[in-house]
Image (cartoon, rainbow, N blue to C red):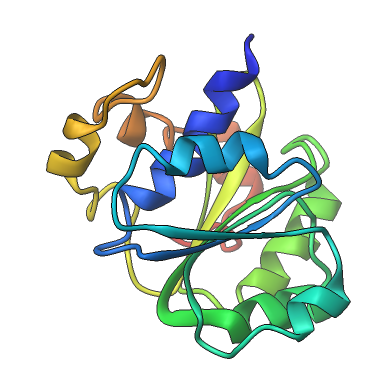
Length: 181
């Protein structure tokens, strides 16, 4: 699969879930791929930093609506991410394969200290990301108008968005009580 699918899914799922995303933090060694997708939305300010707890710790409290992260955070990283996210903020993060149950349960349990909703979703390339939200539900609160009005997309659309959250019974049973939806 092409990387553009993952890039679109990492960006447009949270930006079309949040009610009014204006400030985005990208934590990645290759933020450009996500910045290119964010430019398809208007009135959004993306700030990119290298993967570094020190850099995150220097950011203002409650500064970001959405964080797109390519680091599997431990408790310290997650607490810093929570600190810089607004009260209705969303975090999309990469994580170990859903087959790595122990690592994922530990990571999702840590996220559970800060977020009401924690849901894996398919990135369209065989991998998954985690959407963690303090307020908005990714399938109930999708902004259909925003999702339909985006130009220049090769994969993401308003039908793919909710479908990405469909998980088989094996995942539901394995992560019962850990996934929060």
